[in-house]
Image 1 (cartoon, helix red, strand yellow):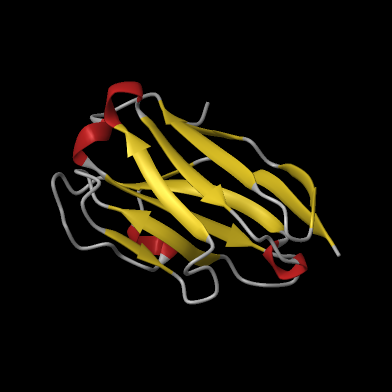
Image 2 (tube, rainbow, N blue to C red):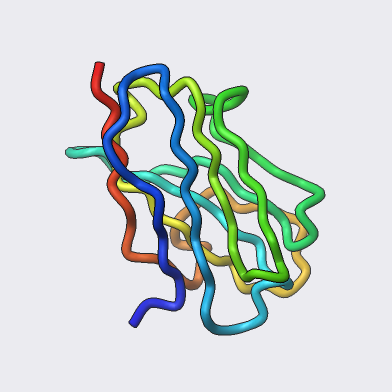
Length: 127
C-alpha cells in the first residue's frame, strides 16, 4: 500500500478549478519536501510544483505559474494543489511525491530524486 494517497481529481470545464490533496501515512511528513508531478497521455511525467518542509518556499513549472498553488498542513500530514483557470492541456494523471531528505530547502525537479509516490489521480479538463 502506498504511503501517499491522492484525492480530488475529476472532470472540470476549462476555466474551472480543482483542489487536489495528498495524505502521507508513514515517515516524518513535516521534515520532507513534497512535490506534485503530472503525466499526460503519451508524455513523460513532469514536475508541476514543490514545497519545502516549512512551507516557506515553493517552486512551480512555468506552465502553471500564476494558476496553481501548492500548500501543506503538517499537522494533518497533507499537501494540497489548488488548480485554477484550468486548461485542456492540464489534463493528466497527477501524482504527489516525497523527497525524504530531512529539512532540505532545495526543491528538486526530477522524478528520480523523489523517494515515495502516490498512485495518482486523474484530472480531465474539457474544452
